[in-house]
Length: 411
Image (cartoon, rainbow, N blue to C red; front, side, top):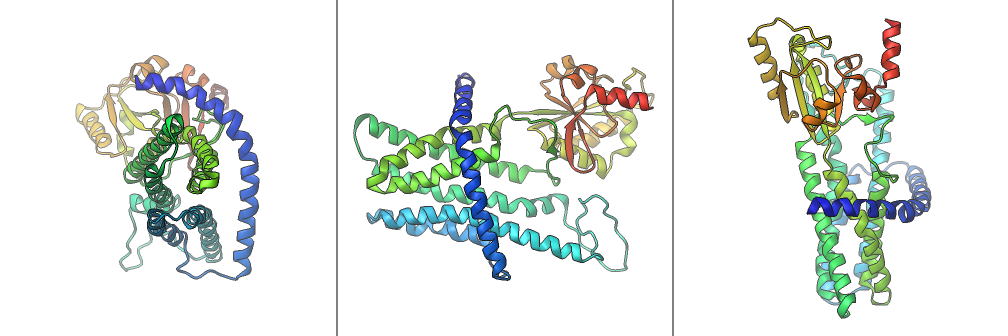
């Protein structure tokens, strides 16, 4: 029943995004781009920021404002809490500007230091030279979480501030009949949507692999005409400005309209986060000796492209030739794959050639491989852009049948 309801809602939400949100985002982007340039020029003109004034500091500081905001609301104040809400929204924008400032500063420092050694083993070209002293390196997972923590905590703190505000505002709903019903349902829906989004973010952060997901080129997984980051920005603006105005009695209904306008955006944001996408990776028995950190990195990257990773282990080549290695070798490669935390399922005895029938039978959406390793994918998968190749630069793109034919001619 829930799936049927979502199937019915999806085209309606998409229509709303295209007709209402997309035009607004053009002006939204222009305004925030000018504001970003103004603030960045202001920061640069000051020379430098204090070391303690980081993006995370701003995030933590604005989140603590929930305490005075709720206390003032409980005492019947409305103007100051509304100002606090809009200040928190501005702080959410400011921490992004400050984060980019420190990142640019660090990049300039690294560029000037030509003798700097690579300290992150997940970087391509990493090479360790024993200098006779102890050297400690972070794991891939630790390094990735350290880099992505700022974005994660920023999104979580947004919800930690606004959800308690909505819960309190439920107790101050005015009006009768349909107006009261609309206000209750709007606030209740937003509370549920943001809590669900926060839970998904927590799970994604603590279960992510140690390598960032590849950036897609030439293919958009989303079927929507509106980008995910545009939806998030519009949702944030509608929610925070709407909450601010809803607290003020003389513009309460304008705030309610903005909160109602953010409901489809909250739904779409959660839907995209939980959308399932099954990835398939094909390994042949002769690759057992190459099951090292490069293979592990590839599997982590492949898992980052979807919500589920299935690895097929085959003893047959794409031409149908059977590898004569022992059963022990086949067992070893299966156990190696099973030991990888990024892998959800292993298909032992997979066919040498993977076609659409095999993908459909096992509920698989995309065939992912390394460069020049797309031979097991059938021409049908190539024509449908279901075969993706992950390059060394950390990008993924579909392999076209024309590209494969040109490669054969060059050989």
